Length: 324
Image (cartoon, rainbow, N blue to C red; front, side):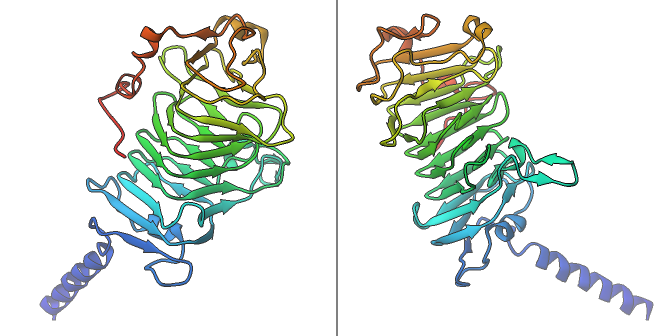
């Protein structure tokens, strides 16, 4: 009897282990609102992924609107979330900073408002929209990043104030062929981020970036071959203002519209003029004239601009170059 009980327990253990490991492989997981995939919600697909995977795991998301507030936790790596169609595969939520939280006796604040928070590293988003569709009632983050080696290819990020928060210093993010829109400081934070061939829409008279690059980090935000546009009612846009001292932002080879202020940049605080690292090189368009730029910004010479490459910018902790 004792041997039978032992054998039964062993068999149950094997069955349970097999059940727990159904998704412990590089096979693609499919998410579909209409029930034609393995999961109806993206959160459920994220939940079954094994911690610290050595292989590349794709979560393929079929067209649809997914009203989810998502977290990719720190222990998940090597995940790609790939949408079927960028404009019609949408992750959306609607928190904003002034929603009252009884538990803390005040508004939720900026950093709880995210639609998608990525804490894990080596995560890729492709062909998908991340949206915070809260009304303009305060800060409302669509994408909140904390991990390193994050890649975003052909994605849309929709919101108003504080659309994208790059949340950790010495973390690297690569945005390629993306569309980003917002009103105030809608790309902000301390991370190192390269934006390549992106379309950026300004929806209000305000500021595009609010970098808080630490003093000991060589590069912050770099926009290369990007196109800046503005809604018809917009007249006065600054390229950026420093959220913290030593904020770094560079626009190079970009198209700048007439709505860009002649001075280009705002100091936020007078003392920030002494430390802000605001740079431009070889931009074009009606907003690219440099003769009235603030004296504490800088136009890069060609030789120096040619030294700013993905390899050099991302050489913080290792030799990571994002795969496309």
